[in-house]
Figure 1 (cartoon, helix red, strand yellow):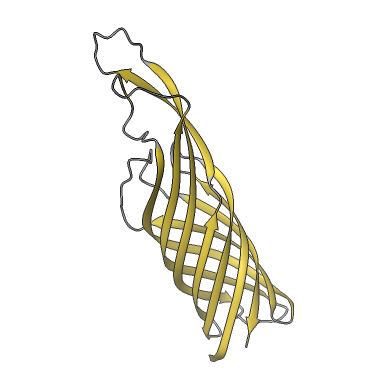
Figure 2 (tube, one colour):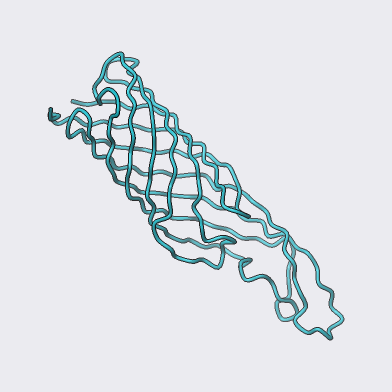
Length: 205
C-alpha cells in the first residue's frame, strides 16, 4: 500500500553519552526530522541534530626538551569541550504497526548515512613554554572542527496520543564510516556514542 503525499515532521530531546576512551562525557541535544512515507511500513527520513558541547579533562605530562636543563617535568590539565552537529538521511521501517496507526504501539528501526561535524576546544590549565617543554601530540591547544561520515542505526517505539500526533522514544548509535584523523583528539575512534531520544511526530496527509 502506497502513501498519498504523507509527510511527518518531528522533533526530539536527546541525551548523548560519548564512550570514547579519554573523551567520556554526557550532554544533551535536539533533532528535527522530516519523514516522507512511501508505503505504510517504509519511510525516507532526513534529519538535522545539534548537541551542546560536553566537557572532559585529562592530566598530561610536559617534559623538558633538553635532558641537561634544570627545568622540571610537570603535570598539567587539558580541559576539552566537544560537541556534535549532524545531518543524516536514511530509511525507517515499521516492524510493527504503520506510520498512521491509531491507538497501537508502533515499533520501528532506522538505518542511514550521516555527515557529522565535531566542534572541539582544548584549553591548558596553565601556560607552557614550548621552547622549553614538549607536550603530548594529542594535546593541541585551540579550537578545531572535524568531519566524519557515520552509519546511523536506531530502534524506537511510538504511540498515537491524538489525531495525527505521536510520542516516541528511541535508542540510537552512530558508527564511524570514515577516518579523518585529528591531532586535537585523544582517540580518533570518535564518535562512539549512545543516544536516548524522546520526541513528538506530527503527521500531515
